[in-house]
Length: 353
Length: 280
Figure 1 (cartoon, rainbow over the protein chains, first blue to last red):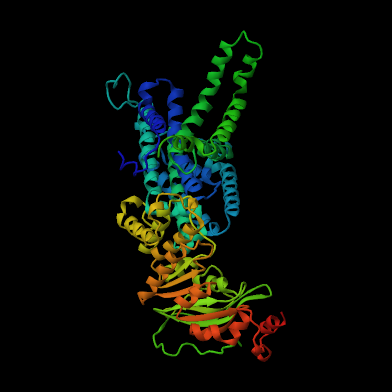
Figure 2 (cartoon, rainbow over the protein chains, first blue to last red):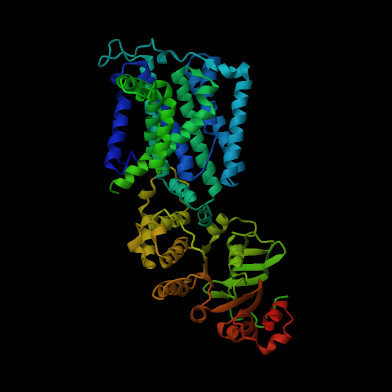
């Protein structure tokens, strides 16, 4: 277990319990929650754990601020989506599309890295922003190929369709449909990629990333070529984002600008990293889970709250479900204000080292 | 033409490890280092002295690559490094301890040194092994920390160290790189009296190994006298004296330019700096 975690334990009892709970709930989600919304939420958490963890590799470990992460996410989504749309609903399309997307994503990350990681951080951020915007415009303009703003709906391989049943009989009262199978592909990939990221940050390579974040001038003076390290981690994070995008397309059976390329998703990723705790990776799990659960259930919770407080003046208006975005905003401002080092940083400081 | 009242030490025949040829850098109209030509042999310790602003640290920066030279060459073991970057020069064997402490503040003291050990071992590229699994690197880092008497602080973040301990850590990082050329930039500056001997002993032990080339920028003349085989004097970016410590310190040019004693020879010196010094 410890070696799976690359010796990087959560280092706080509360944190360990929370993380274990998230792991168990995600692993058992199809059995524990029968509804479609619950499973959609769990799937989205799995996808975002990959996306946020890979972004944390950049911003939290290497100190690289990139706004192009959704572009790589989109490349994965479009790669798998358009392959399934154009070549038919086969596994060849899934893996062929993913491979093409990985190739394009890594080449783009390499190019952006080599051209711009030498310059100051702010310029790199600007360049990624420009490239990502260009890519988003390209995706919506090439409507004959990408489906434009409407995106593309497509069929997935038969084994992943809801009508498919892995076994004749239900297992523990649940039919193992193609949808459940798809969920477990997402879950297993997320778990594997998270553990891989954890391994990378605790490797000699990862220790150099942390050194670059701390003092890139000194890292260079030790003999490490910082631009090489930065470019490598940029490619790795891009590849993980591509996989996350591909999985998301597989789950939604749809790909379009709003689900992958929109700048709103980039902001969500940033918030999840900051809320969870930058440079901790475990923060990616907690940040993604908290954010997505809040996004999906705050409205419902507020409806319950508003109904319960019906007699009291003002209160029901304040927590009316229509105001959920306001409360989401307040929650985030409060969490950043009270936990400047993120939730993980907060618990680590409180707990014994 | 830089003034050279003393010829370079003639009784050394060994191949120089490090050479600089007409090394020059201009910042706008200001020439910070002006055509410095010098060579340094293995097993010697050369002190580089000169008043503030003489270009000593800039000279170091030109050698280790933090600043690119406007003209001139840096040659290490016969290999021209003038076009190489900082990282390549460090890998080639130029070690540098910085004057203004330059550490990884939030990483532990041990990790600061371990990163240097790892750099020397060429092991930074491995993504899938565990850094903590390379026990030999950690053991070596601990050994070096013990040498500079920092073993007790190994677990602390570098930022928590006292000023003197930070300087020692700076030296420890350079030791871990095992360079051919050690460049110490005022290693004892700001240290308390009882801390100074630790660093000086270390430099002395390095020197006794006879295979390392040591360059030392130092203001304390007693330190220079006790350690240096040779003294190079920089003044206003130029090399004005080069030779055995006793002779250099006694030479009129050093007495006047560096120690600020107006020597009678001043009138005979054609160089502009000397004239200005003499006017004071």
